[in-house]
Image (cartoon, rainbow, N blue to C red; front, side, top):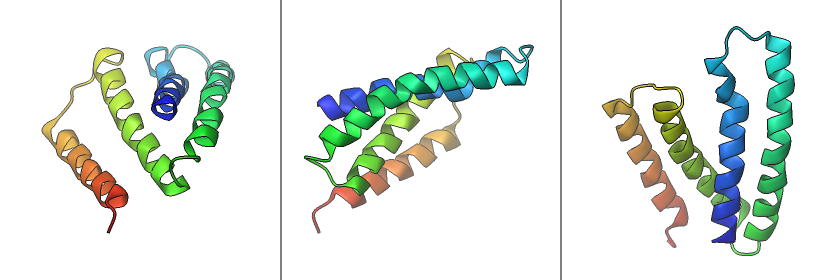
Length: 109
């Protein structure tokens, strides 16, 4: 669970670093880039330990798959509540297909 928690916190920081500035388009791009780098520093402070600890239980492909699934959840909540964007049916379908991919990757064949 520590790995999942660290990956989730990491994704919260990265989502704000990559997309949080979209609400502030009046700010000059170079300032947004610097702010994003500052936020991304904290993302790395959680992502690197998540991968280090997680690699004791999961292989790298499984870690990346978990990270991508968490990213989609975090981004969906972020886009709906922070950016006030609509969540469409085709997004849900696409995410369900990704969940199917997670199943395929984690299934012991």
